[in-house]
Length: 262
Image (cartoon, rainbow, N blue to C red):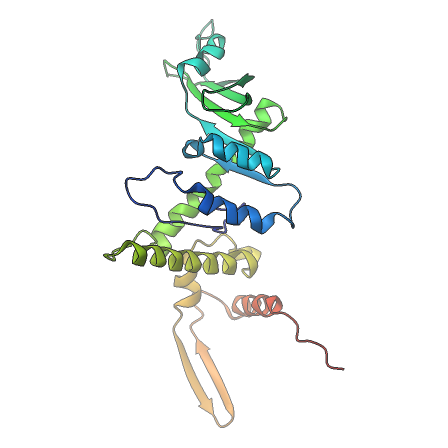
């Protein structure tokens, strides 16, 4: 689970035969408790793995606005049947996009909820692309879809975790050992992301987690001592002296100020 800044809020290792939303309370409840008293406007975006009435009720009780992808079924498609008919006339060269909003109650739900549908007709494709979202937002359907689509910002974070941190390398024999190893990988990911979001100057704020260690951490250096003076001679190929000093100053500014002496 990620926040809008790319920070990993919480992760959990599950057996390979478990559902994607198994033990969702163990992951979701600590994050919700963390922001319960500090944040007034709280939102949740989720993919189709979080289609669970228990999650809806939990988020509603906590005052969250949510958008969660909903798998298509015959009942939902029947509600937007008029949008699934091919538009009359010559197919255009651009994408035709339509939205709809209606109330829907699945058999396992305790009450009806709002469902937003998006239908896209793409040039050269015979059938439309259809997506459904369950939400408790009151925004127009187009804005609900735009908000839900921003959950895609988590995909680059997941790829960075796999490629740079290699948090999928869980080769221990015991499940508990692999679970601990995953948490260590999560800690390493957050430390790298904090370095990027809190200390990097704007000129290099786009650096990925693969670039960070190559250009900022794995730098050749030599220690030279002259009497009481110690000098670090560092290679200036990747990071200039001024840029490195800016990063050090930003890190220093994050430290809490010492208490004033009376």
